[in-house]
Image 1 (cartoon, rainbow, N blue to C red):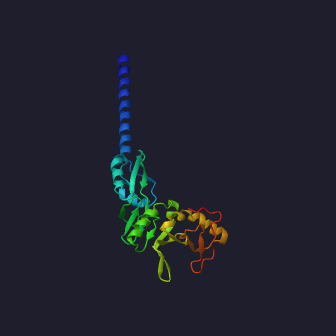
Image 2 (image 1 turned 30 degrees about the vertical axis):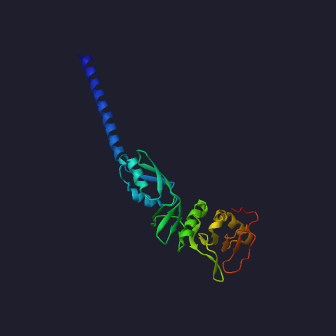
Image 3 (image 1 turned 30 degrees about the horizontal axis):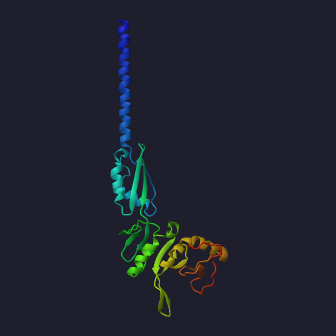
Length: 252
């Protein structure tokens, strides 16, 4: 009789242990199912602000378990300049978003549109960063040439351009270069360039370093609109004072 009672007690303990394990698993599952999105990491966005993306997808404090990655990707792809999105998440509430954006050439003030490298024009809003602004009217044929040529501008130079102004070269009120533009740079300099010589702007950072080394930290006008290999620089108010900045430089 005593032996039977002992076996029965062992079985009861085993059942209690199983119940406890099941309870712990259920509670742990319930806990993880309820964990909200606590942290969002966004990488790959050059033009769009993080806050804009986060507000657009509206996932903060939602259970991480209920975030459907496919639905979230489709929501991100509805943003005009996003061409691809990869999403990963973990049970601790961490969400990682890796974006691919279309390259933005400039913002056209005249029609309030962003001009993309792929030829699309999309509506502009204040949530974009580091985009040059075309501030005045350009004749259609020259405008189309500008769009084509801006595609060859390197990203590191493009983000240093603040404004683009159509600025034909005149001599005694006669147009001698109807394809010339003025680029106002974020560093305070101005660059005159035409669509024919647009590739020269890719050497801007190197050229400016030469200017600084030669003349010190000055701001002025750089003339890259000539077919000559020389690069001209002045203080924007005087005649050209420096016409041989290309020594050691690399002309595009």
